[in-house]
Image (cartoon, rainbow, N blue to C red; front, side, top):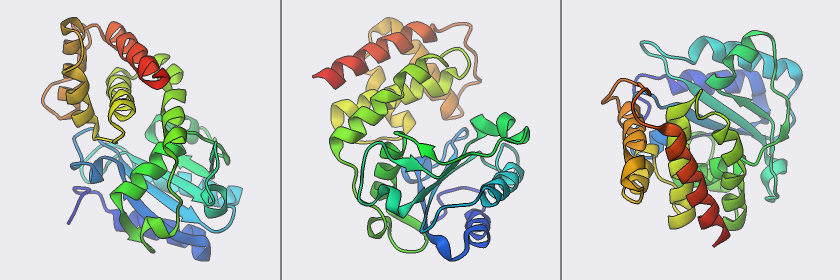
Length: 252
């Protein structure tokens, strides 16, 4: 089953194999492609597990090649590629360390020569949780053979840790911020990880009427049903309500 539309995941896998060689243990698909299917604005999310540390040259080569294939256009999708060294996440510990991360929100930095370096990254907790739930290997064994499960307490504190950064980006990345906040709230309340549109629907049903239009618009844009315009709904007020709901859920 093709879960990534026109995007050629085989090309991405071959890039990882040719760059990382025998150190590459596995490549797994996760995210929207495995949570109900890609939407018009969805990324293709891939996690690679490696045996050994990467070199600066390997990470730079991955950046340069991903800049060519990631993005918007015919046959192209934004690609989010994460690398972890197996020994950094198995046995599990918090915060986990991320060996490499490529995402389109970092494109400008990468085009100016920045190369991502290994660093602690709490966001790996939900990423690894989604990888294990999706169970969608593109190369190598099933993810449960490579990764340990993330304790619920660590998943909860990791997703809450990212809320201040999201709130700082309400005006610059409005759609993604509202949808991500809705997903965080949904996960805290239900224990499950849903697609962004499913999480937005769950959250909208629990929002005061005045905050529903902003989240509904974010969801409609994500689904390709509306053009993105933020001169009507009040996204900041909606985001602040969601942040308060998240804080209340996390403390309960």
